[in-house]
Image (cartoon, rainbow, N blue to C red):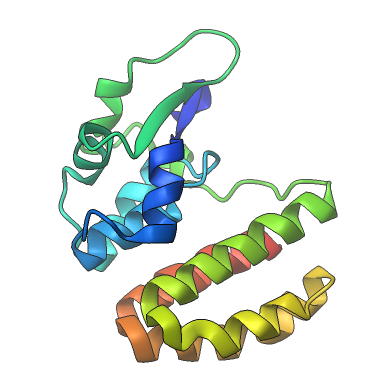
Length: 174
């Protein structure tokens, strides 16, 4: 089902992550941070269920203009079908993706995700962690920072959120 495309942040969504102007509920905001244009919808739904985010989080974020459906080349699946609960026929959709062969792109995506997640969880208190992220230059540096990342997110947002975002960061790092 997700082979036809993914949800991605709109410019308004990127601005919302930065500015927090809509005052989204914390779990809904965490889901907005997790939407990156490449994560399968089934994986997003799984993360939302783990975090206790509203079941209609995709529709809510789309209604606010924060995310949009971006179709992949080829036949397009209607995005409305992706709001439905996963069926028994879709377990392959939640299987881990193979990491990108472009290590630089993976590094930038992982660094950005870790920064946004830390800022989301800690607000201004994420400043020192952000400085540490800026001193990372390769995936190994980010990998070494994962325990501190998990600890920081746990402190700011709780163990469940930390477990989900740490798993996503590990996936991005590879």
